Image 1 (cartoon, rainbow, N blue to C red):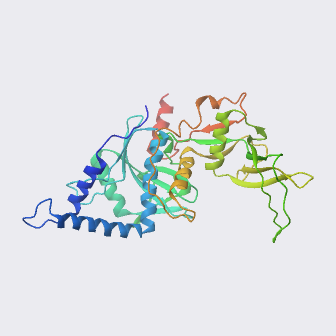
Image 2 (cartoon, one colour):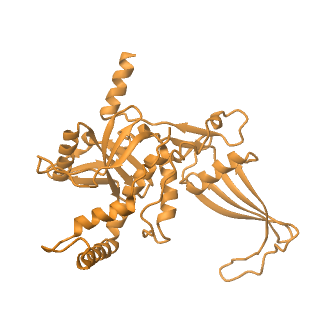
Image 3 (cartoon, helix red, strand yellow):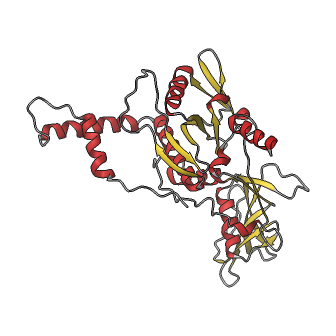
Length: 368
């Protein structure tokens, strides 16, 4: 059963809650006093101006909503709820609310704090004070605390138990190389997709329309205007005719992490025959039948980034409504039969080798 958003009066009740937070009533004034409304609207404007001018805050907010969307798209959780919204009262003075509460398919409830890792960074830190405050809240709720890190340079998600972080004098550190073997994204339905390269999008020129190369320009460039007669999708040299396979291959080309090379085929009359956009892995290994394209979470994150970032990488939107379970259904179950398929696919489900869940799986194997 897929996740679905619960209906709530977001506009009416949300704005009323915001009014309560920002209202500063004077004694004897009514709720209908226009000055109180003007004050709240002005406060919203000031806060919005400050946040929109803070690029780091915008990226952090965008990645936080991205994680929620990834969970919904993967369909591996029974429930996800924003945990840090609304008032909270606690006997503990030093507690911090994490970003999300999740209930997994096996019934486990976890609390997740989302962090964005800056491009180029291979490790990230969190202050011990913040970490301990988050852990106190998790302990009060009888739940594990996990950190979801988006390694933006690699377009990669990791989800690790707080116990995996290396604790130092004033901060706890997580390196990417340590996050990978502790990654619990598989429990959310994540998996890595692989296929045989190359993947090619071929635009065939209409032979009945003008398609001749023009004269050489500055820099040795030559231009040709042609009409597209047909679009072919090829996988490992095979032209795909099945519409579902074409759809999957195009999604992998558009959202995967392979390099793309543009080449044109020219006949003896200097006329364009076709233009190929060839996608290959960064390091192709001869003789290896399958090469990793990306994880399902990375594929969705690439689509989310395309929808929320401008050409300079600056946030243009902060959220996109996810489609529950879409990434799980990206590749239907019958596509895993390698027999007569033109597009050969592999699916690798990866689970942690270190951390609490790794220990549970190890105990389960020992008792089997």
